[in-house]
Length: 224
Picture 1 (cartoon, rainbow, N blue to C red):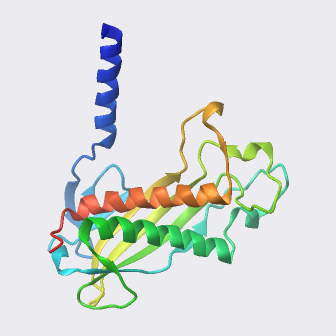
Picture 2: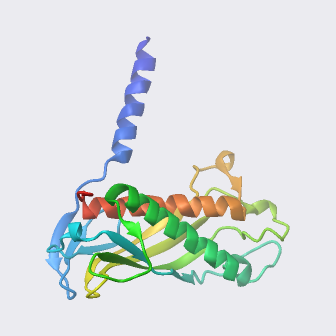
Picture 3: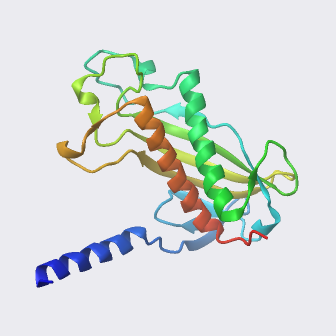
């Protein structure tokens, strides 16, 4: 094996390890809600109730998402209005489905939490909102897409998520952070056409990544 190939492999391994590394959160003061604030590069805001014993929870309830959109004016070659870049009722249900599937699957595998619609002492509740959602291209399949509908990213958003005790309603964790969906690289060569099918896949992957980031803050919990 020549020296150049060895160097390339070593660089690739080093880059891969650094990309997967999530550095520990730095603890800050306690906020007005009684949560310890944390500084972590993946989040704009993060705080957790340090006294919480997450082992007491066995079930997960996920409340429906609320969504608000970025107000940036669109410049679309088909002169479509803002509603072409917002979810209708069916699309909103699919967006919620990706969120629900991502969190219930990720946390179910990691913690053994079962999905429920009830509230009880062993239930932890996810309350989340998506703000500043910006679709880079319309996902309406019944419309002709312009050439510029090929994008490097499919959307950007801010994910605001709280964890709440299912019985007392006590706030356990509060988080907020920016997230991009469908990033496949920079430049024309990595651009792909946006469609509803591709977008739901992008959203699911982004929500699953967020679920893992939050799980890293909660830590490992025995499943038995």
